[in-house]
Image (tube, rainbow, N blue to C red):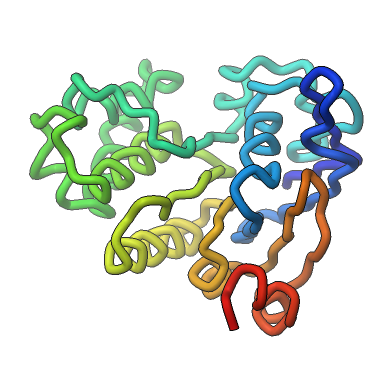
Length: 235
């Protein structure tokens, strides 16, 4: 479904991403592991059309997305849930969710169906649909950010650090929901520092250091890799 082939991204004279190869097959849940600043978010921004790359290519269902604008990439089926949530704090929960369906706004029946699905995944969002997004707890805001992304009906969902800043119990609930979203048919590419939790639900993973992939393999291979465990799991 998604293929990054020799992808490089430069910020002036600084190379943030260097010659990265990643593949995500339809139906998979793949995780990008790495410390803050390793390059995971830059990869996501390149896939979403926000950052231009200096070399290589990104293919989605066999076609390059290099010349596509971010809105066309969303329409094609790639949707990013950004690190930091990026909610409209003064707008209500409902209004934030409807903004997520903007590209499908003329298909009212499908928007209604998507809204029902989000409320099923996150019942608290229906309870608080008239509340300002900024009034929600951190965990609820993350639920809203993911729910808003799902309103665009993605084929491929990019989740950037969804567990950051959340309490352990909420993190566990969040990963349960991410796994359910994947099991329902949405392909997921997940960027995470919480390697232990992410690898428990992922099919495969890639480990980033300084803008390059240093280790890749199945989730079990990465969980039992000594260098990965020492760096990211603490065993």
